[in-house]
Image 1 (cartoon, helix red, strand yellow):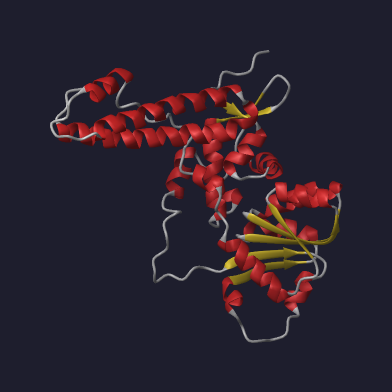
Image 2 (cartoon, rainbow, N blue to C red; image 1 turned 60 degrees about the horizontal axis):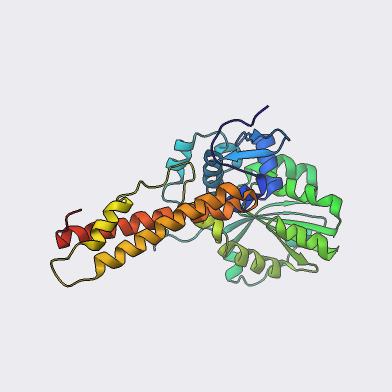
Length: 324
């Protein structure tokens, strides 16, 4: 049986890099909320379409901004785009930033926070709101999805390989964009694998004040990195059409401007170089599945840069009165 003709597809590792969603979280979201339905290769490998990547990028941004995954998972792509509009706009100066909503699951940290004696509040207190404190995993699983968490704190005194999927499942169920794992004992390999799943691992002991400061620091850096940049590029949309083909660029470069100005010539060189790299990155993307995420980003970014420089060239062509 041949693989379905669905255009460019991406494996789950590439999708994780494109969206910032760890593979285990992505699998949970698919199984529990049907966020996307990847096609399958002959070998049974998940293959995600460009539209799936666009959906997941938008859903990740909405969840990072407080929407419950259960509320946005089934929305159409267009509805997701409308809902995500303005998410990256800075809040009005008069509006105070809302505190980071933190959920904590573990044998002792929730009790430590609940029993914390009264003291003079500092800045971290105002910036952190403990939305749920749990010592029982079953209760947390029942309630986590409705908490609207910005950060999940998991306290596991010991962590072994066979617990990593459990931690990933708890993180996915919570819907929180960031997870902090507090541990006493774990191997370096286990800690590395946690970090590969976008979880931050900190060794115990930790008191409530230190935990608040960690939460503030993690919340202030949430949403950054290359995945945030990729949110600006909708991979399901075709790249901007070329404004000038190769022949038109050659005519512009050869034309004599009405004033002594080298800008048309320089802009033609820039646009030609971007066109060449746009083609190169698309071909690399199609040939190299392991680097599909990187080359998808390069192709989309280069196409956008090329369109921007073409618009600049059009302004110069008009100002110089050049015949194209």
